[in-house]
Amino acid sequence: MSSQDIPEENLPAAQDPSHDVEGIADEEHPFADPGLPPHEHRVQDIDEQAARRSERVVALLFTISMLATAGFIASFVSIPHDKSIFVFPIGHISALNFALGLTLGTALFTIGAGAVHWARTLMSDVEITDERHPIAADEELRAKVHADFKQGAKESVIGRRKLIRGTMFGAVALVPLSGVVLLRELGPLPGTKLRHTRWSQGKLIINMNTNEPMRPSDITVGSLTFARPDGLEEHDEDFQSEIAKAALMLIRIQPENIKDKRELEWSHEGIVAYSKICTHVGCPISLYEQQTHHALCPCHQSTFDLSDGARVIFGPAGHALPQLRIGVNDEGYLEALSDFEEPVGPAFWERG
View 1 (cartoon, helix red, strand yellow):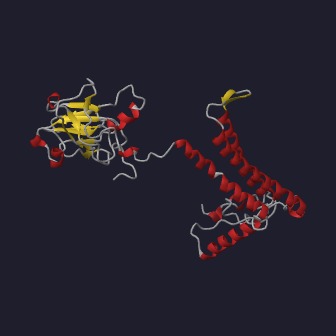
View 2 (cartoon, one colour; view 1 turned 45 degrees about the vertical axis):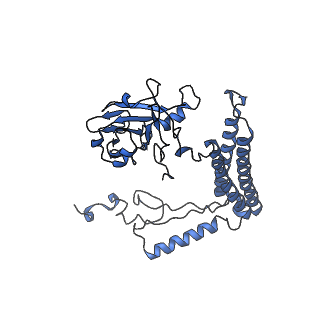
C-alpha cells in the first residue's frame, strides 16, 4: 500500500499535510502545531529599577564568591592542622578541613547562583522556534550562527551591566587561586634529591641479609645478593625513603659473558652492581635468571639484561638500570667508588 492509499488522518507527522498548520489539534488535524503561548514579560523587562536590583543581587553573589576565596586562602595559611572544633551533629572535626570546605563550597556555589539568577532575571527569555536543519552547515547557516552568537551576547547584557561583568570576572579569576594555594601541601621542591643516593666513594657494601660488609668471595656465579650502603640502618628515621633509592643488587657473571665492556670497567672480577629499583614505576626487582642473566620486575614484567648494561629487553620500563661503580678496599671488602651517575627509579622530566 502506498502513502497515497493511507487515509490522511493516519499519516505520520512528517507526511501529514496538516502538520505545518498552526492551530488546535483535533480529530481532523491531530498533528496541528499549537504554536507558542503568548510571551509573558518579567518584571525586570519592563521595570529598570527591578533590573538594577537583580544586577546588584548577582554582583553581591559574585562578591561573596571573591570573599570566600580569600577566606579559603587565609584559612589554609592561618589555621593549624591539629586544631579541632565541635560541629553539631557531626562532633569534633578538623577546624582546617571545615574552614576549607565551607569557604571553597561558598565560592563555587555563589558563582553558580549568580550565573543562574543573571540568566533568569536579566538575560533574554523570549521563546523562539527554529526548524531542524541538515547536519552539514552551509554559508547561510554559518552566518546565522555568528549572528545568533552576537545577538546572544547582546541579550546577555554583559556589555551593558558593567557591575555584573566586573564582579563575575573577579570571582572567576580568584577561584583558581584556591588550587594554587593547595600546591603548598605538596611540600618543598625536591632540588637535587632525585639525583643522589646514600652511595658515595668509599661506602662499604652491606649485605641486606647478614648486615655485614661483603667480600668478593661472598658472591658466587649465578647468585643474586641485595645490599645497602654502610651507615644506612633500618632504625634510621629516613631509612625507608633512602633505601628506596639506594637499594642495590649484586650479581657475579663470568667476564667472558659480559657484553657491555663498560660494565666490566665498573665491576670487580665479574661482580656487577645495579640499582634494585625498576625504572618503570619503582618496584623492587627480585627475580633473576642465571642462565640468561635476565632480571625481572614482578610488578609489570619489565626485563633487564644484566650482562648487557641492564638494558630493557621486555616490558614497559623506559631506561636501563643504573650501574654502581664498585671496587675493593685495602681490607678486601667491596665498596662503592662513586654514587650512581644517573637518577635511579622511574624517569622524570629532568632526567639526563
